[in-house]
Length: 159
Image 1 (cartoon, helix red, strand yellow):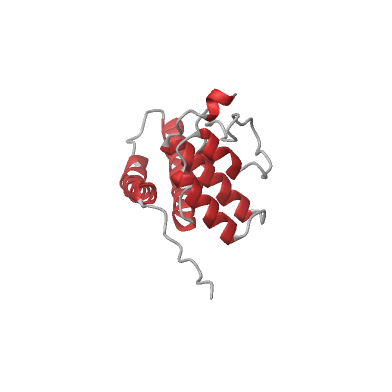
Image 2: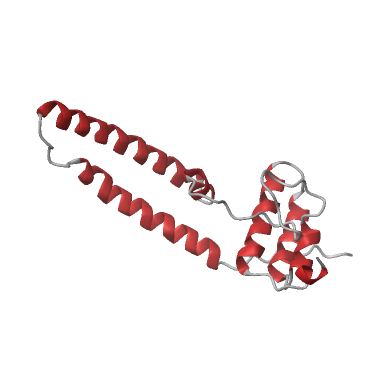
């Protein structure tokens, strides 16, 4: 166990800790000041041993965690997991897009099924362009969030 604490942490490990800390703030378990301090320490951590104390006083989330207190990555694809890192506006747009595309595919399937032959796949023209735009915007937002360094928080002057 001591050897694992000395292993170097990856950027993904640091981000998982920051995500867990963000969740703790949302749950009211940490104040914003505590979150900022711990987030700064997480981004500066070099080993699992540096990351472990940052979440030591927080409850372990659903699923198992490693000895360093970092949650294991999900085993399968989850739409909720993909949308979790997006701003609320993009999540709503993705859900609306999915609903509209689903309705169009159902209508197309009914028309094809009752017509006796496979109809032209017109739902592609509904799903494709808007889905491509949403995908590009979502990817841009996620990349910009990952590449942005943590914001420096001004320290209050003691005096």
